[in-house]
Length: 335
Ligand SMILES: [Zn+2]
Image (cartoon, rainbow, N blue to C red; front, side, top):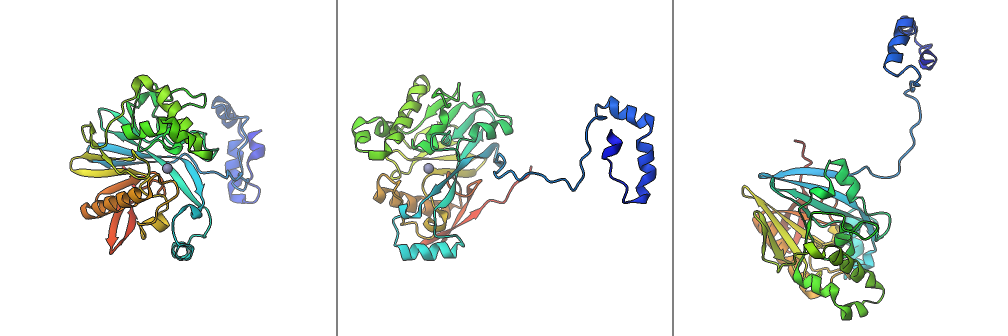
């Protein structure tokens, strides 16, 4: 049967090889390999388009540590959520070669392996915000990491696209051994029933945060931003996006990376205009000030940042140009 699949009739030079292939000995060898019944595909065969991205992970070294960006998915964000003059927005989107339309932003999470312990910074959304997110378990499996391997999940803030992924679809703890760490102020805000009552159609956010805290109640370790999380991992408050919004500075052998959570959402706008806030910010004034303070420091000290919603893997450096900043993604690394 195998010889029927070999298309050599157009090239007379191939014929001697074909005769050898169909010899009894060759067929026996193929059968021994289990391949005698397998069709051999022509290079001209059509392959179906897959229509979605493959599991995405990117590793980099940071001193003695290893940092792996894991893509949970994406969300389409309507630009009118930005607090910006519509004419200026149109100019900025044109400069970025992007349509003035809902912008597709990734949802990044970051694994930090210190050699002693494994930390996950943010957890994505699971399927709570629709089918475009929730790929974290699949991406972790693709790099050979089990949820049971994670020692601590560090949450930048308790919005559903950051904390929702600590839960299984059934609402249980996805990470059976991990401590859940987040700022005390964020935990208190999202547990507060008065805040929830005022949330209108955004009550879902409160429910996710509460379910996560409940599922991890025996392993929940809130902290005040500024606390040392572990050797080489420092929490630093960046209050405004939420009232406990926290960044995490990772440092090994003098190399530093700052995981900045939702300090910004729309790269095409908020690097050049860091004063622009978004409707998702709980306290617009504080969010604006926190972004400026953080951008100033990151550019001055030439730190690397890792952001939840910058184009995957979401890691790079900032350069200052007057009151604006530009983002330089890290080069892709192979090691
Ligand atoms: Zn977010």
